[in-house]
Image (cartoon, rainbow, N blue to C red; front, side, top):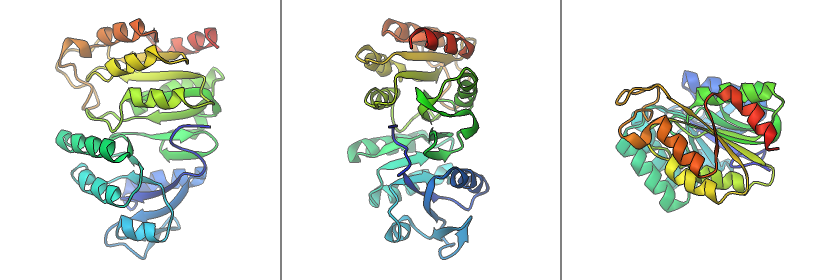
Length: 287
Protein backbone atom coordinates (compact mmCIF):
# COMPACT_ATOMS: atom_id res chain seq x y z
CA UNK A 1 0.00 0.00 0.00
CA UNK A 2 0.93 3.68 -0.17
CA UNK A 3 -0.66 7.11 -0.19
CA UNK A 4 -1.65 9.16 -3.26
CA UNK A 5 0.91 7.62 -5.65
CA UNK A 6 1.05 3.99 -6.82
CA UNK A 7 1.83 1.84 -9.84
CA UNK A 8 -1.62 2.55 -11.33
CA UNK A 9 -1.16 6.34 -11.20
CA UNK A 10 -1.44 7.74 -14.74
CA UNK A 11 -0.37 11.34 -15.30
CA UNK A 12 -0.53 14.21 -17.75
CA UNK A 13 2.18 16.86 -17.53
CA UNK A 14 1.10 20.45 -18.17
CA UNK A 15 4.09 22.44 -19.43
CA UNK A 16 6.00 19.34 -20.52
CA UNK A 17 8.05 21.19 -23.16
CA UNK A 18 9.81 23.39 -20.61
CA UNK A 19 13.44 22.50 -19.94
CA UNK A 20 12.94 21.63 -16.26
CA UNK A 21 9.70 19.75 -16.91
CA UNK A 22 11.22 17.64 -19.68
CA UNK A 23 14.14 16.67 -17.44
CA UNK A 24 11.73 15.56 -14.71
CA UNK A 25 9.57 13.71 -17.22
CA UNK A 26 12.59 11.75 -18.47
CA UNK A 27 13.40 10.71 -14.91
CA UNK A 28 9.79 9.74 -14.19
CA UNK A 29 9.51 7.75 -17.39
CA UNK A 30 12.75 5.89 -16.69
CA UNK A 31 11.41 4.99 -13.23
CA UNK A 32 8.26 3.51 -14.75
CA UNK A 33 5.71 6.23 -14.02
CA UNK A 34 2.76 5.99 -16.41
CA UNK A 35 2.86 9.26 -18.38
CA UNK A 36 -0.21 9.38 -20.61
CA UNK A 37 0.30 12.76 -22.27
CA UNK A 38 1.80 16.21 -22.17
CA UNK A 39 -0.08 19.51 -22.49
CA UNK A 40 1.62 22.35 -24.36
CA UNK A 41 -0.66 24.89 -26.10
CA UNK A 42 0.39 25.32 -29.71
CA UNK A 43 2.31 22.03 -29.78
CA UNK A 44 -0.62 19.64 -30.13
CA UNK A 45 0.08 16.75 -32.50
CA UNK A 46 3.80 16.68 -31.67
CA UNK A 47 5.56 14.43 -29.18
CA UNK A 48 8.41 14.74 -26.69
CA UNK A 49 10.24 11.80 -25.11
CA UNK A 50 7.74 9.66 -27.06
CA UNK A 51 4.97 11.30 -25.02
CA UNK A 52 2.13 12.71 -27.18
CA UNK A 53 1.46 16.45 -26.82
CA UNK A 54 -1.96 18.11 -26.78
CA UNK A 55 -3.11 21.72 -26.78
CA UNK A 56 -5.40 21.29 -23.76
CA UNK A 57 -6.20 19.02 -20.84
CA UNK A 58 -9.55 18.13 -22.42
CA UNK A 59 -7.86 16.95 -25.62
CA UNK A 60 -5.34 14.90 -23.64
CA UNK A 61 -8.05 13.22 -21.57
CA UNK A 62 -10.09 12.44 -24.69
CA UNK A 63 -7.49 9.83 -25.63
CA UNK A 64 -6.10 8.87 -22.22
CA UNK A 65 -7.35 7.84 -18.79
CA UNK A 66 -5.04 9.98 -16.64
CA UNK A 67 -6.07 10.50 -13.02
CA UNK A 68 -3.26 12.87 -11.98
CA UNK A 69 -1.97 16.15 -13.38
CA UNK A 70 1.55 17.50 -12.94
CA UNK A 71 1.93 21.26 -13.37
CA UNK A 72 5.17 22.89 -14.53
CA UNK A 73 4.07 26.31 -15.78
CA UNK A 74 5.14 29.84 -14.75
CA UNK A 75 3.73 30.99 -11.42
CA UNK A 76 1.42 33.55 -13.04
CA UNK A 77 -0.25 30.77 -15.07
CA UNK A 78 -0.75 28.21 -12.30
CA UNK A 79 -4.25 29.34 -11.31
CA UNK A 80 -5.49 29.34 -14.91
CA UNK A 81 -3.99 25.88 -15.40
CA UNK A 82 -5.64 24.67 -12.21
CA UNK A 83 -9.04 25.89 -13.45
CA UNK A 84 -8.56 23.81 -16.60
CA UNK A 85 -7.62 20.72 -14.60
CA UNK A 86 -10.55 21.23 -12.23
CA UNK A 87 -13.01 21.58 -15.13
CA UNK A 88 -11.88 18.24 -16.53
CA UNK A 89 -12.37 16.14 -13.41
CA UNK A 90 -8.82 15.21 -12.40
CA UNK A 91 -8.66 14.67 -8.63
CA UNK A 92 -4.92 14.68 -7.84
CA UNK A 93 -2.74 17.64 -8.84
CA UNK A 94 1.00 18.02 -8.27
CA UNK A 95 2.27 21.60 -8.62
CA UNK A 96 6.03 21.93 -8.93
CA UNK A 97 6.01 25.67 -9.62
CA UNK A 98 7.45 27.94 -6.91
CA UNK A 99 6.22 31.37 -5.90
CA UNK A 100 2.53 31.11 -6.78
CA UNK A 101 0.88 34.41 -5.73
CA UNK A 102 -0.68 34.04 -2.28
CA UNK A 103 -4.18 35.02 -3.36
CA UNK A 104 -3.99 32.47 -6.20
CA UNK A 105 -2.78 29.82 -3.76
CA UNK A 106 -5.76 30.56 -1.50
CA UNK A 107 -8.16 30.17 -4.44
CA UNK A 108 -6.58 26.86 -5.41
CA UNK A 109 -6.82 25.51 -1.88
CA UNK A 110 -10.45 26.60 -1.45
CA UNK A 111 -11.54 25.17 -4.79
CA UNK A 112 -9.66 21.94 -4.11
CA UNK A 113 -11.41 21.51 -0.77
CA UNK A 114 -14.82 22.30 -2.25
CA UNK A 115 -14.39 19.89 -5.16
CA UNK A 116 -12.53 17.01 -3.50
CA UNK A 117 -9.14 17.50 -5.18
CA UNK A 118 -5.83 16.65 -3.55
CA UNK A 119 -3.21 19.29 -4.39
CA UNK A 120 0.46 18.50 -3.67
CA UNK A 121 2.36 21.80 -3.61
CA UNK A 122 2.81 24.46 -4.90
CA UNK A 123 6.61 24.47 -4.77
CA UNK A 124 6.82 20.71 -4.34
CA UNK A 125 9.84 18.63 -5.31
CA UNK A 126 7.61 15.62 -5.82
CA UNK A 127 6.38 12.34 -4.39
CA UNK A 128 7.53 8.75 -4.65
CA UNK A 129 6.18 5.36 -3.73
CA UNK A 130 9.36 3.26 -4.07
CA UNK A 131 9.23 0.59 -6.73
CA UNK A 132 5.90 1.86 -8.05
CA UNK A 133 5.74 5.47 -9.22
CA UNK A 134 7.57 8.79 -9.12
CA UNK A 135 6.14 12.28 -9.51
CA UNK A 136 8.65 15.11 -9.85
CA UNK A 137 12.26 14.61 -8.84
CA UNK A 138 12.47 12.76 -5.53
CA UNK A 139 15.67 10.70 -5.86
CA UNK A 140 14.87 6.98 -6.33
CA UNK A 141 18.47 6.02 -5.52
CA UNK A 142 17.95 6.92 -1.84
CA UNK A 143 14.37 5.72 -1.49
CA UNK A 144 13.81 1.98 -1.22
CA UNK A 145 10.51 0.31 -0.20
CA UNK A 146 9.81 0.14 3.51
CA UNK A 147 7.50 1.15 6.36
CA UNK A 148 8.31 4.83 6.91
CA UNK A 149 6.01 7.56 5.67
CA UNK A 150 7.82 10.85 5.05
CA UNK A 151 6.40 14.31 4.45
CA UNK A 152 8.36 17.54 4.17
CA UNK A 153 7.79 21.23 3.41
CA UNK A 154 11.30 21.40 2.01
CA UNK A 155 12.29 19.38 -1.02
CA UNK A 156 16.02 19.68 -0.33
CA UNK A 157 15.55 18.64 3.29
CA UNK A 158 13.49 15.64 2.23
CA UNK A 159 16.40 14.44 0.08
CA UNK A 160 18.89 14.93 2.92
CA UNK A 161 16.77 13.01 5.42
CA UNK A 162 15.92 10.28 2.92
CA UNK A 163 19.65 9.83 2.33
CA UNK A 164 20.40 9.66 6.07
CA UNK A 165 17.62 7.13 6.69
CA UNK A 166 18.49 5.10 3.59
CA UNK A 167 22.08 4.75 4.79
CA UNK A 168 20.74 3.59 8.16
CA UNK A 169 18.72 0.84 6.45
CA UNK A 170 15.24 2.38 6.49
CA UNK A 171 12.80 2.22 3.60
CA UNK A 172 9.68 4.19 2.76
CA UNK A 173 6.03 3.56 2.03
CA UNK A 174 5.62 6.98 0.38
CA UNK A 175 7.76 10.11 0.60
CA UNK A 176 6.20 13.48 -0.30
CA UNK A 177 7.42 17.05 -0.58
CA UNK A 178 4.18 18.84 0.34
CA UNK A 179 5.32 22.28 -0.88
CA UNK A 180 7.24 25.25 0.47
CA UNK A 181 5.03 28.15 -0.62
CA UNK A 182 3.15 30.05 2.08
CA UNK A 183 -0.12 28.40 1.01
CA UNK A 184 -0.12 24.62 0.49
CA UNK A 185 -2.85 22.66 -1.24
CA UNK A 186 -3.17 20.35 1.77
CA UNK A 187 -2.12 20.65 5.40
CA UNK A 188 0.29 18.51 7.35
CA UNK A 189 -2.70 17.16 9.29
CA UNK A 190 -4.26 15.96 6.02
CA UNK A 191 -1.12 13.99 5.13
CA UNK A 192 -0.88 12.57 8.65
CA UNK A 193 -4.42 11.19 8.31
CA UNK A 194 -3.44 9.54 5.03
CA UNK A 195 -0.42 7.84 6.63
CA UNK A 196 -2.48 6.80 9.66
CA UNK A 197 -4.87 4.96 7.34
CA UNK A 198 -2.15 3.32 5.24
CA UNK A 199 -1.51 -0.30 6.31
CA UNK A 200 2.09 -0.27 5.07
CA UNK A 201 3.14 2.81 7.04
CA UNK A 202 4.23 2.05 10.60
CA UNK A 203 6.07 5.28 11.50
CA UNK A 204 5.84 8.80 10.13
CA UNK A 205 8.62 11.37 9.72
CA UNK A 206 7.41 14.97 9.43
CA UNK A 207 9.93 17.60 8.33
CA UNK A 208 8.84 21.17 8.83
CA UNK A 209 10.25 24.66 9.15
CA UNK A 210 9.67 28.13 10.52
CA UNK A 211 6.79 30.23 9.21
CA UNK A 212 3.06 29.60 9.16
CA UNK A 213 1.35 27.41 11.70
CA UNK A 214 0.27 24.18 10.02
CA UNK A 215 1.85 22.48 13.03
CA UNK A 216 -1.13 23.46 15.22
CA UNK A 217 -3.67 21.27 13.38
CA UNK A 218 -0.94 18.68 12.82
CA UNK A 219 -0.41 18.45 16.59
CA UNK A 220 -4.13 17.79 17.11
CA UNK A 221 -3.95 14.96 14.58
CA UNK A 222 -0.83 13.51 16.21
CA UNK A 223 -2.72 13.31 19.53
CA UNK A 224 -5.18 10.79 18.06
CA UNK A 225 -2.76 8.76 15.92
CA UNK A 226 -1.84 5.18 16.67
CA UNK A 227 1.45 5.50 14.77
CA UNK A 228 4.48 7.36 16.18
CA UNK A 229 5.40 10.65 14.52
CA UNK A 230 8.98 11.99 14.43
CA UNK A 231 9.66 15.64 13.63
CA UNK A 232 12.56 17.83 12.65
CA UNK A 233 12.11 21.60 12.40
CA UNK A 234 14.39 23.78 10.26
CA UNK A 235 15.29 27.30 11.34
CA UNK A 236 16.39 27.23 14.98
CA UNK A 237 18.63 30.27 14.45
CA UNK A 238 16.44 32.14 11.95
CA UNK A 239 15.85 35.84 12.73
CA UNK A 240 12.22 37.06 12.80
CA UNK A 241 10.99 38.77 9.63
CA UNK A 242 13.61 37.34 7.28
CA UNK A 243 12.58 34.86 4.59
CA UNK A 244 14.78 31.75 4.74
CA UNK A 245 14.63 30.02 1.38
CA UNK A 246 10.94 29.27 0.79
CA UNK A 247 8.43 32.10 0.62
CA UNK A 248 6.62 30.45 3.54
CA UNK A 249 9.72 30.22 5.73
CA UNK A 250 9.50 33.54 7.55
CA UNK A 251 8.69 34.19 11.22
CA UNK A 252 5.83 36.68 11.48
CA UNK A 253 4.70 35.93 15.03
CA UNK A 254 6.00 34.03 18.06
CA UNK A 255 4.13 30.78 17.36
CA UNK A 256 5.94 30.46 14.02
CA UNK A 257 9.40 30.00 15.56
CA UNK A 258 11.12 26.62 15.72
CA UNK A 259 11.03 26.63 19.54
CA UNK A 260 7.27 27.30 19.63
CA UNK A 261 6.57 24.57 17.10
CA UNK A 262 8.74 22.12 19.03
CA UNK A 263 6.69 22.76 22.19
CA UNK A 264 3.37 22.27 20.41
CA UNK A 265 4.44 19.07 18.66
CA UNK A 266 6.15 17.60 21.75
CA UNK A 267 3.09 18.25 23.90
CA UNK A 268 1.01 16.38 21.32
CA UNK A 269 3.25 13.32 21.62
CA UNK A 270 5.59 13.75 18.65
CA UNK A 271 9.28 12.91 19.03
CA UNK A 272 11.17 16.07 18.01
CA UNK A 273 14.89 15.98 17.16
CA UNK A 274 17.31 18.91 17.01
CA UNK A 275 19.25 17.52 14.02
CA UNK A 276 18.19 15.06 11.30
CA UNK A 277 21.11 12.77 12.16
CA UNK A 278 19.31 11.91 15.40
CA UNK A 279 16.38 10.35 13.54
CA UNK A 280 17.74 6.83 12.85
CA UNK A 281 18.49 6.07 16.52
CA UNK A 282 15.14 7.46 17.66
CA UNK A 283 13.26 5.46 15.01
CA UNK A 284 15.04 2.27 16.00
CA UNK A 285 14.05 2.73 19.65
CA UNK A 286 10.35 2.72 18.78
CA UNK A 287 10.27 -0.04 16.12
